Image 1 (cartoon, rainbow, N blue to C red):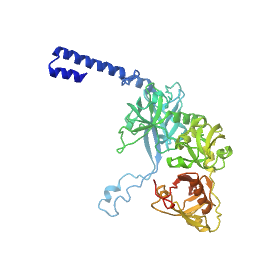
Image 2: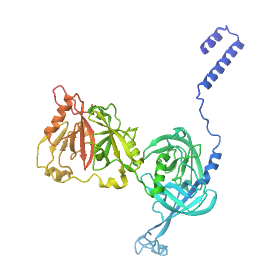
Image 3: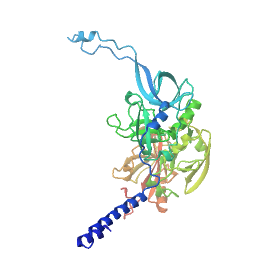
Length: 502
C-alpha cells in the first residue's frame, strides 16, 4: 500500500489531502495490527517494588558471625636483628594471642518460632552467631540446627515467638520462568538492609556441586548477600542467594540462587533430623554420549544414565547390571546423570521406586528400595583383590596396544582388577587417543560382555561388525573408576581398521 501511495504522489494523480488521509489510515492500521499481535497476558515492568519490599522485609535478617582465630607472629622477624629500624617495631602490640574475627551475611525467617535459613559458608566455623532483624535494633543469639555443605544450606534457630516469616515458592512453577521479575534482599558489603531487582536470566544452572540447581539472575548480589532470599513477585522465596560470577568480586549481573525446590527439601530434613538423609541407588553412572547410540541396541538418542558399576547395595538387590541404561526413575524420564542424581537424592530413604532400564535392546521394569547415601556410599565399591594371572598375550587393535593382566603390569600401573585388557600403548592419531584413553586403563567389557583375553576382544569386534555396528562400546576402568567409551569400527578399502575419528 505504501508503494502505491508514493507512486500516485509522484505522478501527481492524487491530491495532497487524500495522500495524507491514506498515510494516516496506513499508520493507524499498522498500530492496530501490532496491538492485536501482542500477547494478551504480557506483563509490563512493575511500577514499584515498594509494596513487596514492605511486605517481606520484616522476615529478612542480617547475620554476624564471630570466630576465634589463632594469633599471628608479632614484630619479631619484621626487620633483621640489629637493624636501625628495630626500635620502631619494638613497641608494636604482640599478636601471638588468639583474636576474634567477624563476618557478615544474610538470612530469612521461615517460621514464627524462629527457624532461619542461610548459607552454610556464612556460619561455617563460627562460635557465635548473632541475628539482627530489619525493624529491630535488638540482636538474638542463634544456634545451628543443621548444615548441608553439598547445597551450601544451613538452618538456624533463635528463641522467639510470633516472628514475621516468609514461605517457599515453587521454583519450577509459572512464577519462576526465565524473564520473570525477582527481588533480592540482604546485607550487601555490610551496608545494612537493601534490595535489588532484576529478572531470572537462566534456570537449572550447575556450578560445582552434585545437587546444584541454581537460578541465575541479574538482580545485584554482592558480598554479604549470601544466604538472603530471592523473591518472586508474590513474595515467595524461590531461591537462596549463594554465589556470583565476577572478575572483580562485585556484581556484574551474573548471580546464582539455589532453587527453593532443593532448599525446602534440605531444610525439612535438617529440621526433622538435624542432618540430611538422601536416597541412594547404589550405582556408578555416566552420561550416554551421541557416539554410543549406534553401539547400543534399542537406543535412539543420547538420553538416560548408563550404569558403569554395581556394588553390593540397593541396585544390585533390584537386579541392575553394569551396562544397563536407566531411562525412567519413579515414573519420570531421565535425561542425564545430573538429573538422575538429583531425583535420587530428593527421594526418601527406604522408598520403593520403580525404575525402567534398557538392557540388550529390551526395556526392563525393576523396583529398587533406596538406601541412605550418607552412610551407605562409603561402604560400597570395595577394593578388588590384588591377585592376578600370569603373563598372557598382547595385540594392537583400534589404535590400542592391549595386554592381558599380568603381575608386572599390576605393579607398574597399580591395577585393582583381576581380569581385563591393559592399555599399554595408544596411537596418538587414533580415535582412542581423542577419547582420553591412557596407558594403564583397563578394558573389562567390550560390546557389554566381559573380556579377559585379546581373543575375546577381537571376537567382540567381529560380532559388532557382523551386526552392522559402526562402533564398539567399551567399559574402561581407571584407578577403580569405570566409564563407558565408544570406539569406531570403520574399515578402509584394504580391510584394515581406520582409527581416525569421523
